[in-house]
Image 1 (cartoon, rainbow, N blue to C red):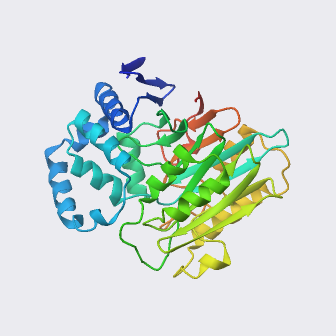
Image 2 (tube, rainbow, N blue to C red; image 1 turned 45 degrees about the vertical axis):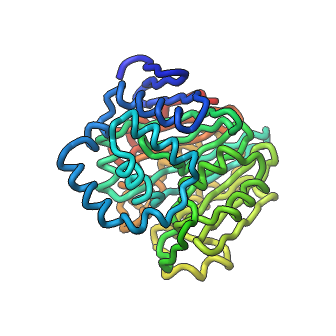
Amino acid sequence: MNGKITFSNSSLESINGIDYLRLREESHYKTGLAAGNLFVKSNYKIIRLLKNPFVNIILWFLRLKYEKKIPEVRIPKEYQDELRGCAEATKIPYKYLLLINLIYEIRGCSGFVFFNPDGSLLLGHNTDVSKMLAKLALRYMKPLVTDVSIPGKNNFVHVAMPLILGAINGFNDKGIAVSSHDAGGIYAKVVKNNTSTSCLVKMVLENAESLAEVQKTAQENLAYYPGIMIVASARERKASILEAYPSDFDFVSFTNTSYIFSANHYQSDKMRKYHREVKKGSLDRLTCLQGSLSGKNILSVQEAIQILKDHRNGIHRDTTGYSIANIGTFQSFIFDVTRSKVYISNGKKLPVPLHGNFVKISAL
């Protein structure tokens, strides 16, 4: 894709290997319609892949396998409308887009937030999946920064994947920032009609203006899958860790520290009981984050990027990485929440923070 492509009030442009999708539509349905049309007009590889006859056979069998479970997951109607708009634009059946959105939500990830003395808030995040999925993501999807504004909702930015309606990270124009993570090694238990975990993150970004509102949203919309969210408020200069379980949650706030961080296990005494085991990789990455952030009073964007590049324990992984940067890291970025900037790796080789450059995108 060269230059900027437009549809309705929205646009998609490529900036040094990063796609910046700016959506400015009047409803969720029209937002999905605009995004889908822009992906089609830019000839996105993932669209071509999902229209491949062989891939359609695989999706048909997966839909058959999971058709009884899909209705158990609650997706707010407005997000269903958004997905229908995207399906109409791409000509990919809605039932397959819904399947893709629900079959694999959040896996892996390392994240941290840091408050500087000048009041600025930085959030760092590496998105990790299995090596195979990471390779597929790099092959069929470019890094995508999506900036969304719908009347009556917060304007928010997140690092997204095309055709995925939820979010696993982001920040909004009210200074709320989120980094979300899988909680691994959990006793399996789901609750019917609980909210899709990625939709819960999106609900926070669209609606919350304070940490109290984040907590209320999570309490009223318990997640279908276990997960962990670092949530920070630039305006309140406070951060919290939300540890979500289908029938429970904990919301731990931190007010007298400049930083907090998370990997892939619950850290609170209340929630630890739900683990069958805590993976060594998750513990090792938590130790890496502690070592990188401990004693710092000021953190620059470049120093934050260096933390995301940390691979002191090697880039290998089992179900999770032992280092912050590992062979499953296919997204790596810093949010400068206060200045509305995104710094994101355009690396084309795994792990992406160790390859390519961090490109600055001005958002909101």
